[in-house]
Length: 309
Image (tube, helix red, strand yellow):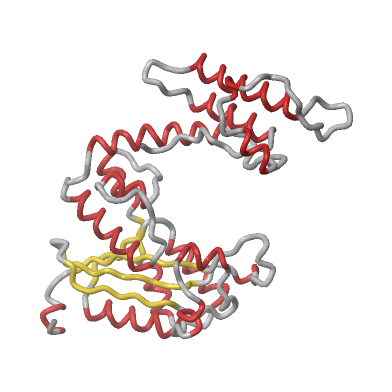
């Protein structure tokens, strides 16, 4: 496109980024300098949502250039890509020049990327030019604007939730360019009124149930992990198993037989769910949270967290 023609128009941009991340067992990861930019994606469109340009680049981190296994799995990035990636300053300069070529009125993100990137600059890249800080400061969270368009109020939902409303796959790629493209698509869909109203209603009900479930859930993980034998035995319904039997000894010296305790507890879960079952076949999320807390006490994984069908 001729540069002079580009400047006669107004454009919108959609931005996404991925950051360095780790798990507790990643001892080599420098936690003092976590959250470094790892990749960026940018989509530019005109005021009629015609796609004009895209930009993508991985970034070579200063303090954590070695990817954790968790980060590789989450983002799909390879160590070779990061080893050969350009520097932070190079990538920001390329984005800056691109946004000069196309006069962008607003740069939209899903979430608080502006805060995260400015924090990264303050902690890890203090000497970057001011124009890069201004670019980061231009990022605008569009979450409340789009959810207000759909629900009449601003609510907090994920990018994958918005994709679901717009008839797309209910997942997040965690690839900076693909997520920026998805943000462009859902914004176009919502502002043009082409989202699925039935899906929007179903999602709102799901979010209410999910949030209530987590409000009442007390244990984040099983207290004592199940053995492989117990996992196999737990596949059948608790109501089909006798409450006694030849169980193994419990963890406590004077505690009840572990198998008896487990079978009785699973029977109690089934009775709870049957008693509180509503006419539509669902169970209140508070009861589901209690059932999963009982499973946690038994060393079992949660099974009843509300799901979006």
